[in-house]
Image 1 (cartoon, rainbow, N blue to C red):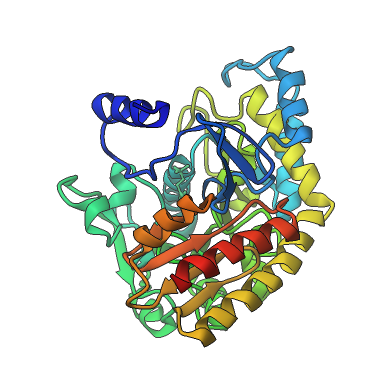
Image 2: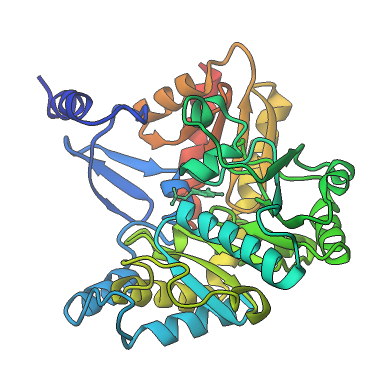
Length: 401
Ligand SMILES: *Cc1c(COP(=O)(O)O)cnc(C)c1O
């Protein structure tokens, strides 16, 4: 029996079946490539859902982590540590905001944003206590906690996890009129992904994000952008909101912020918003720990150069040009996305998203399917053009067979 089959059987026996991974067992990785336990190399075209924007084992990030590992890794927030102020200052500056509230995972950052909006609603806007509403979009993905799945429209994510947290209003994504009708005097925030990743890399209609910005400003409602997957270079800009010249009130960040090394997330906003918190009202033992801050500081420094955004733009133009040709050839019904990020709908007769992912795996390319007939492409931003072209060759071969 192969090492791969053994490892998968063991995992199936002893881990809860919350995922349906492709049958590959990774042992090491570098840049855009992963190597499995049997020495086979695979091109990573998923990049940990954008957590690995800077690639596997990125030298700068590993060096930053290693240096910090030797000094101090955890203090808890009971004490200050010497990487905390720099991290908050630099990240706030990258976002053009004043304050940072660090957490660990994306879902925690979303929870933090929900608490921020409610508290702001009661203490600043003057909403009667207990009546705050947050408007969200259908087909959203904001994480897996009980409150977050309370406003999911995905049955797998939501069913049998109730009773659900109240206070959320769901409107169709991309529909400004519906959003406008859903906003009342008790609405404290609109929470949206500027591009819906899990839904299949859905880009909203032009003018939507700027319309949301305009509406929320007029109605005294916070615009909270979940840029956990879309942010930090993926779309060719530091934030996907920038494509419409939009600055939200609240950025929710995660995934790539931890450089693929440690979980780091954050809520970033101005003082009139994040200033609502007092000691004891929110927190996390690991949030803002020295190791997390050291890695995230390096991530911010890397994003400052603009190099990764530039790569995402150039390689992304190439990716979308090539995928567009597949639409023309009939193997693919639609391609969506921005920068180095694409949702590809496989034409009927060419296999399900899962089947295409498995056939790509056989050709040593790793992607993830979503919603039956879609595959998602989001290679690390450090991928070379040659490797990207090789990956696209494999996709063409799979769709031709
Ligand atoms: C991944 C993701 C989350 C949740 O992040 P976790 O770290 O998995 O908790 C939330 N929002 C978006 C848009 C995401 O892509």
